[in-house]
Length: 340
Image (cartoon, rainbow, N blue to C red):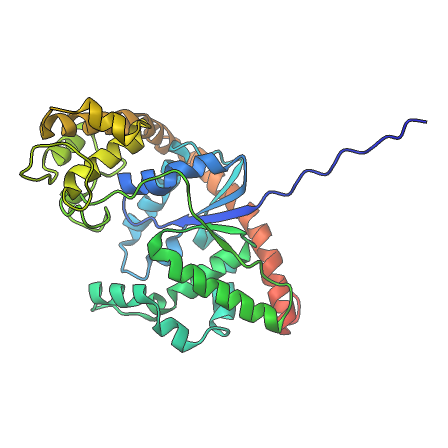
């Protein structure tokens, strides 16, 4: 008699959570360093992408502008190719479990730990007129975001490493008191990407909070992109070579060109050998426009279909809330609250 061997159960995908604040249009640096890589993850991982509107109010926001930017961010996530059937796309504020979990974790986090958070010190210096408690406990809300979904992996940049570590510490402390509640997350460091620097201060990371000429926004028009690159800082030496220490401006433009075209640094430098900085700026301008134009076209199509956008964020919130509620209910039961 032939033995029938049942097929092996499909291996459970690891879960990734990432968030982006709706505080202005993302930069080319955000796209190259993070956003374009998200599309590459959707088949391999169970992905949730959150528009972190609760995080955004540590800085004062204009209500109408916040609403508009939140919808625009959702449209951008779709425009870069994220499939709402394969990924959970949602507004953080539409899942009340985030705020509830944040309060629980506040009671398991020590003041000394929060006092060591360097980003609080940096942001306090920038917003001296509004040093609010939310700014101080921001890492706890972030920890709640991650732990609610039992995320195995969290895409992080160098400026978020400290926040991931405090999340891991809080989860481990809670699990030591109430076993098997939270998954301890690991950092996910993308193999694809480049660190994109400011066009005017190329020793600093490109940031949308800097003056407009310092960054390329994903929705910048071709004319604006061309103007910004023309004004980009280079140096008095006319040679095109990759030398971040001595030629940070030129090296930044070369890095952007490599990232956008997929060509190697050696090939790019060889192609531009004997040419001037104007040729380099034209090349990186053309590559940027070629990559961003299709995204902008899709963005405008999504923005013209408000009903579809609403269906995406409503479905996303329902899916996210189901996952989040399982963890929140488990944590509350372990602590001793009467189940709802």
